[in-house]
Image (cartoon, rainbow over all chains, first blue to last red; front, side, top):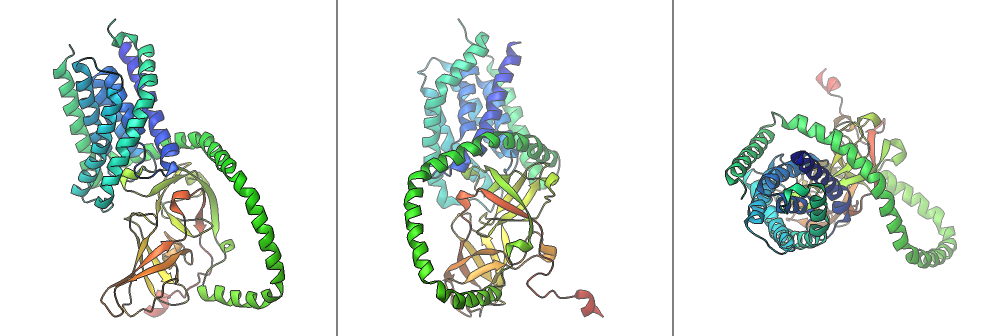
Length: 171
Length: 288
């Protein structure tokens, strides 16, 4: 029952995040990276529900990003990177109580690492598209956008999770 | 408090699954082809629905932003109109020259192409380094893999994945894109490759002695049967030459005609013109 609603709310948020990322955020052509909405949602879900939900959401969100048109990269790369992010944030969030903005900071830290990880994996796998001279600016802008999205979304999405799955929160 | 062993096992399984997917995708087998088809069909349809809301809003915002600009533009255009009227008597002369130049350029009037119009509905995230977009036409509109995509300005790219109602377009600036190009007005040909940057393309000239000047226009050479690239579509202008004449490899930097970051309405070329603007070598006649 509780697991069912947790999966449902996570799935809806992730699918919406993927659709918004490719149809709204990417066409804005902001300088540098595209704001990583899916990553921010994975971080928030991991922060709310812990490491297992975090890892599963990361895998599912990453896989959706890998196959959502017009994706042209190797399937599995985003899934791998976001699984690591979801698990790590989930483990961190389980440790103790922290201020609400800590998730936004984590998103801002994770986003540039995911950009770097994607470039390193792409390079290792022989992807001719990787441009190393652009990686620094992509990392910096990705961090900024993820921090802003995190600050905007942590409270409303956290509230939504609490409302839909109140059993996941003690007291 | 929570079961860390279980979460570690879940994590390890998901990492292994991701790595398996990566390996399958690189080897070109396993579940990745159906996965892509599902993505193009299901997520493509969802993106199309989403774009039904997003695109009108985007257009509205654009037109609101352009309103103040519009009135000053009208004034400027009226002035220009008056000036053009004064120049009208010289037009006949210019027209003859323009016709000659057009013929020289070998550009085909866009009316000769049978194309289906499409709206760009989604763009690939920049951190993926790939330059691809999704358009709202698919196999139901007659679109197939490897068809040219054009806009009013010139060549945009080619279709690489086609779903029932959406298609994915590989843009010419993508680092994996290469198009046969011809310097219009000459028989000089070369390969135009994407650089991964939206404002430049490189053209590798096949003839090291080719005479190329900055400002020369490059059009598509055309592939066999007009696919993936139809002939005579403007690609860009030469912005810079690399290497000196006679050097083994020479390349030119091109500025593409199409503004990649601002794509909106494009067209997919379903059929190239009946008579391509180039001589085709009849292989059967040569064989006899």
